[in-house]
Image (cartoon, rainbow, N blue to C red; front, top):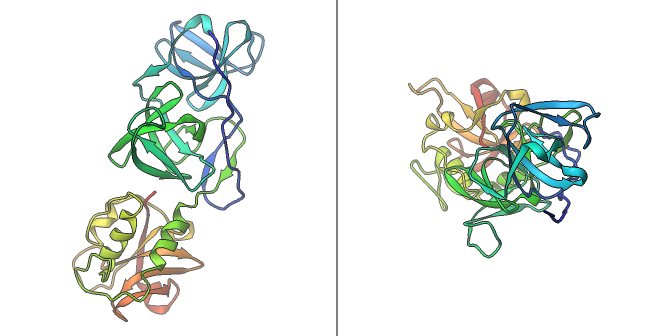
Length: 303
């Protein structure tokens, strides 16, 4: 059987953003291979003399990237690319199977998620470059994905598999992938500068602190909890020296019984944007000012 080859489109950018993936030019995924032998070696080249990269067990699945000469396939096994003998692979172009994680590498700001495996299907939502999602199937070159309680299909041309939800792969060398997501969150938040602080305000004309963060993130398809304390369970924890644009920053003034009393969005260079109870407006402030430096307690990364 023959399959057309197409190159993955990948954007490389030098950035301090810590989403790491090993990117290589490879063909569009053509299907899923199920291992039919007790053990099948993943090799560095399409022959039995080349070095062994990994060993797959019976019924393990691999992403089939392309068919090569003499009965070998180029595959992705647990985010490591190599070659396997087609004699011991059962190939299917469509399967619902948990493959792992996928990192969006669209080359544009967003990637459309469709209701079915093709551009003729309705758009369900969009993903931003650098977003990591669960891959739960494949259908004729389209990945079936799940993210934030939404499932759909994206072209595998614009995604690379990763071994974990942080976006890292299992090969050797790494390159740094820059996601505009955090900066887009910041830029969107800036348009509300000067809007009044109102306790219980949910936007867009007035906000309280957690209403502001919730409203901004909802624009990007993320649902945050309503209160500052409840938003501590959204995303993952990051330390102060790991802060990146878009991260939530939390403060505690010691006057309430909840773990935190205030939340804002980090914008970079020690600044954050928030619905302030000092000036009763959306504004920038410094993490290193006396008040916020003394009351800063936590940070969370949402994407």
